[in-house]
Image 1 (cartoon, one colour):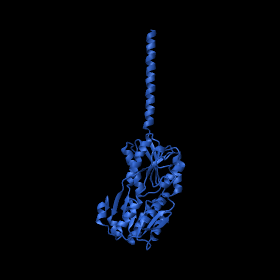
Image 2 (cartoon, rainbow, N blue to C red):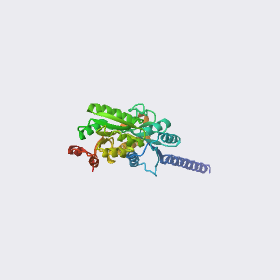
Image 3 (cartoon, one colour):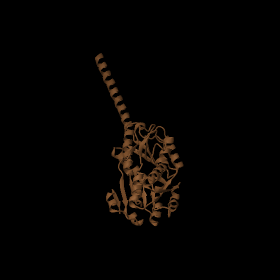
Image 4 (cartoon, helix red, strand yellow):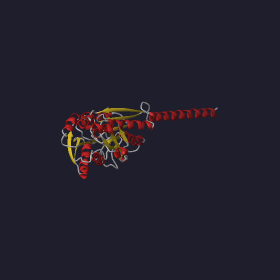
Length: 330
């Protein structure tokens, strides 16, 4: 009788342990299966930044993070206003997010100032170190890493001299309040001197000033250059209008601006930049420390030509340049 009681107690205890282990496993699985929450902050809507965001989301989906299933996105757009960007960043600091994607330098700076714990992935940031976002490009430190959209400024100006062999004065339009644009303007100034060009700068502080800024270059230059400046690119149609009406070749910093009326570029693909950023995000979500993940760059650049724009600007592009192009818009 005693042995039967002991056996029964052993069975009961064993069942209890099994149930306990089963519940622990269920709780752990629930934690693993809990949807990842990602906050996305973007300084302004324009095709390049939108493409980076789309590439990021689609690459995460490829990696198994399906929106509505195991990942959710809280997308906020600052509409070009830094006060709004700072408000969004402060809200993200209080939200229970697993990751933040900051698109463009101003929003990356806003988030970096407010969020100290949640991992931050940046993209479309020209010079993360000059922007004060990282300690170094090789070892960012803190909770930030990501990708740079630094474009080959000198190659872009070289392309302009190929298209217009007698060009001497080139206007550059950018927002002097954006550190990413200031960096590019400095690179353009250096490249212009090496190429024997005189750069005529025009700075703007909002998209409403872009058309007037472009107009101010008429009669002073023989071409216009627009880098990857968020303010100017968001109003690129204003520059295109001035360029078309005054036969001024317009070389730009990225392919989306070519598709929207710019003449040509040697630039990076922002959709691919977004995908590259997402690959880094996958590693961060798996536990890798952003502090030790170097800032990455896109190695490949593409020559993109808009023949329709060339006709509008009364510019003849040689067949040799056309043949080299990765993409030709007609």
